[in-house]
Length: 227
Length: 201
Image (spheres, rainbow over the protein chains, first blue to last red):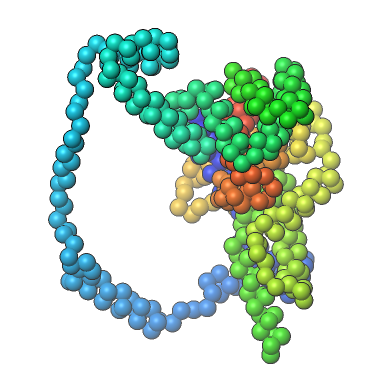
């Protein structure tokens, strides 16, 4: 959905001033320091500037032609092998055998059941390594998706929970100053509040901010805004 | 001779800043005030202020022209809001569905026809579709807070960086990134709400 919103925002780029008005306003400001009563009609040379000489154009064209011809006849990098080579990567990794432990771990990891995850890991030592890879992957994914979310890229939010998105946003703000982040969050909550329920949470957040309990401010934001 | 050259340099500097920024400043003002005439007038006054600043004897160089221009523009827009009080419009049968009071002094609906948006390579039906989308997003944008509006205009339309926006808003850069995300989410919600209202009416 964000992509649709961004596409519509970009249509506003087409809004702009009249070319004639732009040119005459500039001249008025420079000559009088103020707007002229009526916009003067621009001449054609105001649009296109001074005429370019034909001989100048011809000379530039000749040089361009020579350069292109020379590039084709004499490659710029003669030592470079222009033929495309197929690259074969020999991976020295052993692929873990598929057994019931590994498959079970994947299911448990996706379900988010931490308790059973540890029990499953005890059955097969490879699963511990897989769990670590899974965690690293998840962390990397979270970082990448979080960055994409902040850029307004559509669709990636679906791979993050609302809570994860809120946590990522808080981390971003916290990075520079907890105090600034706390103030900013309370301001955001106040400006965006629409329902009566929000007032209680905002009051709670304000009190936490006054007590310099910034972690509480962040928790309130994450819990109430994204639940 | 020296003074003439000095004046010419200043003029060149002004012209460069003007050419690089006039479109953005005009668009920013227009999206805030919804009137082409007022946008032209205000844009001229912004650049007149710039020219006056450049001409001062003690002027050496403008470190960040864009920040200067946006700072002047924002102040002018605030003055404009103070002068033009919000009008409470009652919804009546047959009235324009967009003519509803907003919280940010932009209750009057002004069509986009008076703004030049045509692209000679586009067909008439394409232009009509673009205008419809522009109306939709402009209406939703007008319902956001000023900070969110500014952020969307600066980041997505004027392509300012987060550090430039942070400087303008006097906030940390990380806060700006969060605000960008929140602003787009708010805009999306505003557009959805408008769509539901239109369906309901």
